[in-house]
Image 1 (cartoon, one colour):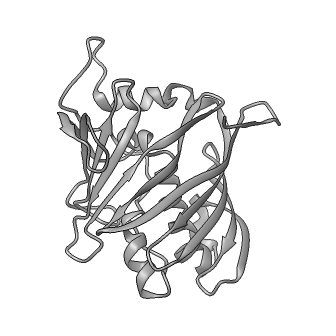
Image 2 (cartoon, rainbow, N blue to C red):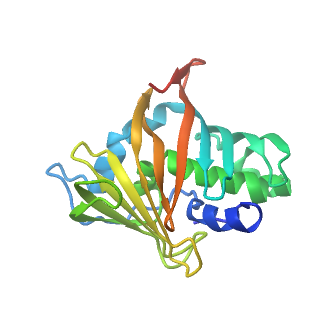
Length: 252
């Protein structure tokens, strides 16, 4: 899962570990259930969020905002071009200095320590929350359907899909993400169980306020609980640019 930045040194380093995941296009592993057309639950969810049209995406733009226990607030502005791996970032480093940088993830070795140790891990974190449904197929996590289960935060039940990361490889091996999926194959809530023994151990969050930008569907509001304390993540200024067009399409 991740290398973290700091929450006033120690606090953010512990809280943000849960959010930073390696971003790689790995082989999809088999899932436990399939629809009548042969698609797995992972494929069904990813398709609902626009995976089949992802090839049309030239650039995704959004601002990732977080409010953590202890009063820490973060705001990271991103632009990502998936075809080229180009990332643009506006935000702050761990000293609070303003940072504005554009880089290619394939050339991290030539970047500054701030980019390698702070900006790019933050990108992996924020992008994971933004495009979580696609990671069902992009990452090397085995996705299994565990049927209807009680929601971890809200009332009611939903179809539980467990994403188990391998015990070797990645930033934080052995992590499990439980996705609670509604009848429309949209994610309703998630729970994260950390594979490592140190905290934070358990995170649950809602996936709400859905908006569509071009062919992609985004959840922009994630209130939740981290080890018994409330936190909140929101996405603002979400938009996409399609290949062959200079026009930004805002999420609405």
